[in-house]
Image 1 (cartoon, one colour):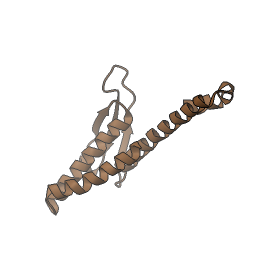
Image 2: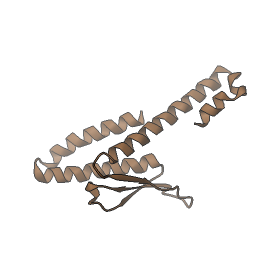
Image 3: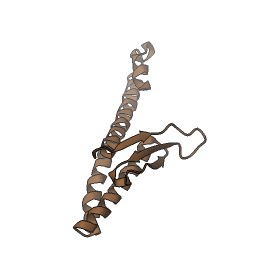
Length: 132
């Protein structure tokens, strides 16, 4: 929330409107990223006993961020997902969850193609909402 601190600073209160608009745009971007982060964690923790671990940044280089997930869909074994940002790692974990759940459901009821269309559409819509 560096943009909020900058807006509160005296020089920005007296600054040109263009700078204020730029700061507000930065705040909106930060809020979108926070929403995407929160929705990723909520989606992965949805099941009873499911847990998500946010790992510290990797200063030695790519991948820079990682999350660990332990849930029913990972057979209760911790699974690591990496990305350039925490949100990207969460998105990879959400996609892995989707594919795993589709595979399990496909064995029980419908064809994988039908489930893929249904669940991919839902996940894609949630990810698009969280990115906008």
